[in-house]
Image (tube, rainbow, N blue to C red; front, side, top):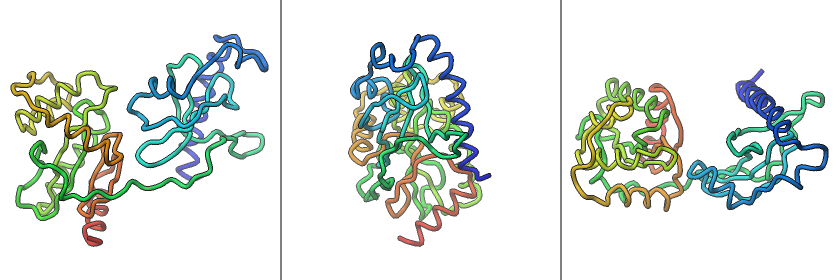
Length: 263
């Protein structure tokens, strides 16, 4: 069984566990859900917030108690499921076990990769340096001071700079709205230009309030939006390739070297 299929099975199990109480709680019988449950694309976007860039469509899912949403994020389009209580969301395909096939009515479009960014246009004034300043290979990391996956990635970044002194990471603050204190913390970190303050925040420690007035965080947020970046962590490699998500140190080194060689 492939890794992707295992993940899909886990997602399916999660959905099935949630959908039974959701359907029962909302009292939906056969064909009655449209009468008592409503969701617009605008409301769905408001609920999901900055987890997605856009909600293209909303429909009732084949799984009772869920809507099927077609969303876009990071230049890619894929399905998400929101339950009728509007409190739970899941991603991935749904498999009908009897038939052994997917029943997800996903829009048939190939995912489009994020556009490359001209790294010379990325401002350095607000970046937090991890590694040696003279390192010839510069990689930008879009991070959030309250993001759990950013915390995990940060530990891998530290392993990379221990192994490779020719690689340096420039950490750019991109606080997400789903983390209520992230904006203030990002401003404090940018004001102080402190790697330790960022690491304290990622570790869940209290950090001081901002001690300066600056629009650098806001400018950074606008820059990321303009270039289609909507999630953290995200890496921008030396050739401008954008790679969202967490990776281990060995994977990071292999990926960085590959894209540096292409450049």
